[in-house]
Amino acid sequence: MTKKYRHKIIKEVLADTDVNSQEMLLKILTDKGFVLTQATLSRDIKELQIVKVPTPKGSYIYQLSEGMNGQDDVSHLSVIGFIKIEFSGQLAVMKTRPGYAMAIAGEIDNKASEYILGTVAGDDTILLIPRENISREEIISSLSAFIPNIQQ
Image 1 (spheres, rainbow, N blue to C red):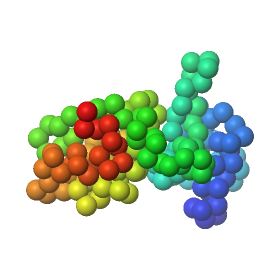
Image 2 (image 1 turned 90 degrees about the vertical axis):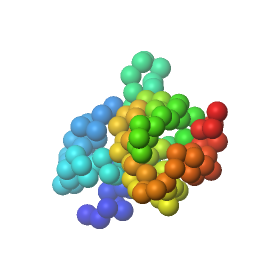
Image 3 (image 1 turned 90 degrees about the horizontal axis):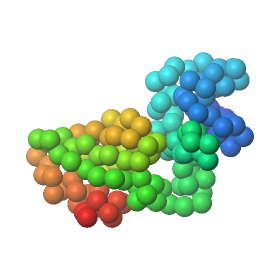
């Protein structure tokens, strides 16, 4: 089964089922005949820009970001999900609202690769690793193209 087909099924599952953990999604996909690792699923979640959103019951579920649903621009996630960025030496740590880090990291990887070598995302924290000889100002400037509130 191809990656494209797996992504299609993941989207369908999230549209039809309240998935509250990667483990639950992995089990659903395994039950549907997919053979994949937790690491592969994590990459799929990042690529599909899936976010964890709060439910009225106080828990969290995975859902496709507005951009992947075709309803809104993906940058919208960065605007509403971004909290702050701090630097330590050459590295930067970005804080996000819970569940937004993976999607925002994916956006950074796609839109700021000239300045950012790579990102590592958790649930609400992103480690940004800049390229050699890139200043903090250049990082902020490159990110401000799609995270306008980063300069506040």
